Length: 453
Image 1 (tube, rainbow, N blue to C red):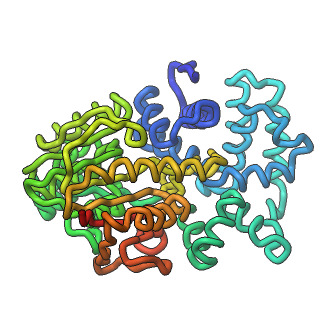
Image 2 (cartoon, helix red, strand yellow):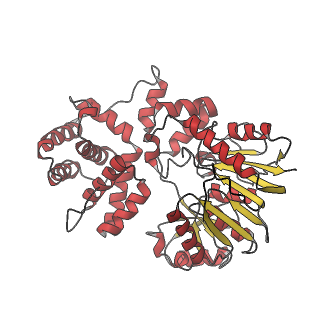
Image 3 (tube, rainbow, N blue to C red):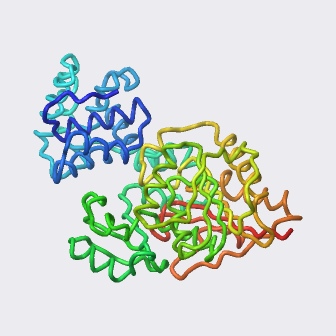
């Protein structure tokens, strides 16, 4: 575990600590960065610089390693993790962060190595970074004609297996669109809490705090916001007038379409955004049963519910795959299942490097959650299956299989697309795959069914 080893942590040291935590402990970047900002009390420009280094390294890790392999006589797999992290940080500052002088990128990397007890590696680091800085042509990509997938992999820092998956599943145009979207930080999307405020009053409040605001064209109460600083410090957030939720998740709840006095079962609820959106559509009337396997995640849902002024959400620990405890029938049942997360790589770039070879097993777990939960859908009720990934095995294959094996009890419901959302692939009308390059949403999948008997 990283310890606080400085009285004053500078941005590069903080970035190194975050990257090491991600590498060694499997931490998620957004959480690790937020924790570092609080722990080291980093503010303003320093916090932005630290975040920029972390995300730049994660977004380009395969590219950075490819470049380093061209300059290092030592194979990268033999380079100590801490040294490799500093090298990646140095290269990203040299080649991909225009405002960092070359001298600072090199010298500060050497200083950081010495600060971290890597005196023996400091000369190695200095030599490689200076050679890159002096090179007239820094690097060339793999030949596009000889190996197209490898070319794309290095250019966009994406594993070849994932590119192969997308090319086979979604075609070249969509694959290039997905890959290009990975190079850009996603815009922050929030939903207006209509229990406390209307959209225009929230816009006015945010603009008074110098936040850049624009409306999401295909969602009534969704806003894109920029220049926020820490969102927890915004008045609108403190007052519970907004909460963070991507447009794809908001659209998912609109498809679920809960109404006042309905009962909603949110099977895999944490962090609770879809339960909150459901409460808005229900005007805080009815009942939402929100489940998760972990107590600390349920505490977060309860805390957010209180801030938002929602009192119809009841939380409980439950294993959606295996728990056989009988539940009351729901008018709306939502199965937003755990998934590979290939649709949110823009937000958590390290996901692409945490490759789990058991995707088939994951799809089977998801299917069991869906089947187990479907029995608690009331006759005439709506069942929604969703993921935040781009992988047909977890998405359309599961939806198709469910309908085939439950056709005597469930029927498909056509998803009516809002203006501004277009299908990127040919798929059944009760399924919708959202692509980041098509509607500025996360990669997401929604399928919807009605219980007929």
